[in-house]
Image (cartoon, rainbow, N blue to C red):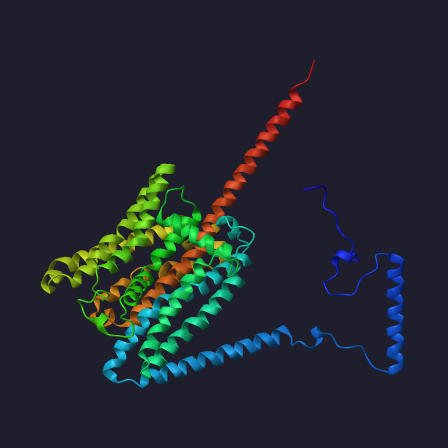
Length: 471
């Protein structure tokens, strides 16, 4: 502010730590003192025959040893949680065991799936860094953005805390401590909410507020839609089941129904037949639908309307599925069930088509089958064509996982429901690779066009300047 930056010398008295011995400002006296002290220390060591003290860094264990010790502790903790949880479940009677596990999965499903999402997001970032994809530029991140290492650090803590709370819940409930067991998920949810909105500069404040800001823009798309806005909104559509379980869990906490089985009744406020469940399930699709309408308003591109139509096809699937619990069985079988199957197939096929041709821009994928005519897409990911066969085939299959509801046994099996939700998150994890890569290719293409245009303009100016002379 008051002139240029002044750099103090390394031996300046202003750089010494508080409590240290004073340092002379005269360089001559300082050099003499250092030389004398050094010679005296050598003489003393020679006379006494002792070596210099070993530094603290020399006695510290190596980073590899520390890492192995942490991995060992992690496995010991995981084994302990599994052992305590299994013994707690086996201690219950058979008629109570299934209901209890269903309730335990209900509380911890959302956070376990969120933990899985964070782990996979770290893998995405690691892959982008290895492939030299500038994801910070794509998502408009600042210099303090989280890297894959920091993401994995967060997911590691989530992996430790969430199962520990679940193990404590199982143990306390099986031993008759119902009130203490009921407090475990409540405390965990409160801790997660407090960490997310904590106003102090700890726990990656800038990244947390960046996430909250994007979520706010998704809820109210009053500004121009950026890539980060609709990218996160697309991820939220794959986590609709997570938000559904989250709503039921919070509802039970507010109505003090934790560690009870009253919620299992059909007329329960927080039961599985509640009208709030389809409303929560449809919200991510509605958010994405309104984003597409806002994009059409800003760009007037008709493809955004077709994208909005894709998200609107999910609405009848959700409400027709929920209608099963509110109509007579004959009415459902003869009329609503065929409509549900038709709308589900339409939504899956439309979404699959959009993934391949629009989000991934694999319209040239047909050239991969013609091996005599290599294409740019066939050489991506180190030229491994099987990656594209796998991702397209698996994406089609995972788009149709909703068909498990055709089986009454699988529909009410909590392990199956958890597995289907995890597979949907895995499908989105694969989708992210190609969606971000497609956006990166578009950004590079635009920059190349701009550079080419600038070069042509400069050449034209040089030609005009060369012909502009006096005769």
